[in-house]
Amino acid sequence: MRQGLRVVILGGGPGGYEAALVAAQLGARTQLIEARGIGGSAVLTDVVPSKTLIATAEWLTTTEQAHELGITVGDGEQVAHVDLGAVNGRVRHLAEEQSSDLTARMAEKGIEVIDGRGSLGTLDAEGVRTVHVTGDHGGERGAERELLADVVLVSTGARPRVLPGAAPDGRRILTWTQLYDLDELPEHLVVVGSGVTGTEFAGAYLALGSRVTLVSSRDRVLPTVDADAATLVEEGFRRRGMEVLSGARARAARVVEEGTDDEHVEVTLADGRVVTGSHCLMAVGAVPATDGIGLTEAGVGLTESGHVRVDRVSRTTAYRVYAAGDCTGVLPLASVAAMQGRIAMRHALGDAVAPLAVETVAQAVFTVPEIASIGITEAEAATGEYDAVSTTVPLARNPRAKMLGLNEGFIKLFSQRRTGEVLGGVVVGTRASEQILAVTLAVTHRLTVEQVMNAFSVYPSLSGTLTEAARQLHVR
Ligand SMILES: Cc1cc2nc3c(=O)[nH]c(=O)nc-3n(C[C@H](O)[C@H](O)[C@H](O)COP(=O)(O)OP(=O)(O)OC[C@H]3O[C@@H](n4cnc5c(N)ncnc54)[C@H](O)[C@@H]3O)c2cc1C
Ligand SMILES: NC(=O)c1ccc[n+]([C@@H]2O[C@H](COP(=O)([O-])OP(=O)(O)OC[C@H]3O[C@@H](n4cnc5c(N)ncnc54)[C@H](O)[C@@H]3O)[C@@H](O)[C@H]2O)c1
Image (spheres, rainbow, N blue to C red):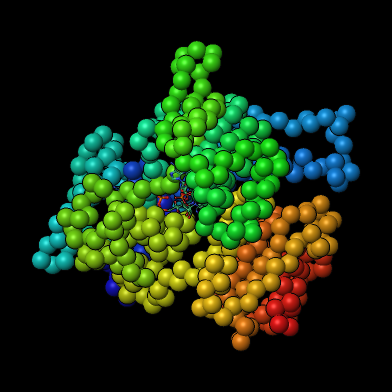
């Protein structure tokens, strides 16, 4: 292992801070440059805040069902309502606390955290690269500093995409990063975009009590997940009163009657229809934060979309420059960013490393019900390439689900016809994000359905449906 190398990391999200921890552990002198706060967007504006907000929404959804379990509150009227100011206060507090914990951990491990914005400079004849920092370090606003690096990691993340003609004003037209400043529940939230971000927020605000209209450019929400799972979520939305406009593309959004009591938002669709609401959330994707930091000049290859080109050990096309996370566009997930960052440092510092295996990445959509998936999708199974068979077992017949009053959801398992190897799975239901780990273990370690079905599941438990699915596939 190469001890004592100088590692400089740009960006303190999961890609950056996880890399810094590995670099320090492997004996590198590690400097982490971060413009806003350790934890990055993942902790400050994206994962932690959204999942904290969703936790409140989930509690409210559960209380809606209380009467089915024999609970009556007061005179039976709905008593639960949301103080969004308090909810968002908790969200911001949790995010800041998490960022502080991470900052303390960096200090504990001897990692130097530098406040500011980093950019790549030149490479000298000895292979040492200069990294420029502009920012508040040392209390001097706008101060410049130059660092010397044997290894550089770029993990600068991404930012919300802005549609021309629908510029967020931070008050009524919002990106997901601006939602947490709201003190009052939007009376009518129009959500533009039905990817994971738009769908999660639409579901959460519906549960919190807002009227919600979801502008979905596709024929169904969540185009990247299996159709049966996405349809179940969409049907649930409609049943709970959400208006889902399918095949609807937003062209513009603007605030009208500004300053009056009738101030509201108008969203114009490509077909000329106009949707009105009190607020609008733009969730139309993200763009990588790779501009203006000297990447092209340093020889770092970018894709057409501006993402950094990397291989499976996070190398870019430039000498000893690695990249991790959303700036690479590999799979924009915190877990993947962290893994790419760790792999980069192990590779750069000469430790043994297994390349990134995207086919073993588990992911979840935090809606009601949750959707978690791993491995091949229904569409991939249908190509015939994997010789896959599948089974879908509804959760409604699971005894634990009945006791808990859960009647939505299913577990779907894919396996290889000949060998019985588990190729993937989808869990739709309460805490699907927790239940998917068993399927992930099976896919990662190439277990067969026979091995899965021979594992004991607790009786009664939701995971009993997984062993049932494995039994069904075994006899095929
Ligand atoms: C609403 C929402 C919810 C999400 N929920 C989940 C989820 O539940 N689970 C999941 O796995 N993923 C989730 N994601 C995706 C996840 O947030 C990202 O994949 C993750 O944040 C990527 O981490 P990163 O390290 O690449 O970048 P980021 O977390 O974006 O951090 C990058 C950091 O780099 C800093 N930076 C940028 N440029 C510079 C520079 N020049 N110098 C210094 N610092 C710089 C930025 O200030 C930022 O703090 C969600 C995304 C969104 C939008
Ligand atoms: N739970 C999680 O893990 C989680 C949560 C949120 C985001 N993420 C990550 O972030 C990534 C990005 O997700 P996202 O939802 O932010 O972006 P996305 O790019 O996946 O989805 C944006 C959606 O907006 C639609 N769209 C674009 N322009 C539009 C317009 N003018 N009108 C209507 N719709 C329009 C697109 O067709 C697309 O479906 C995901 O792939 C996921 O990896 C993860």
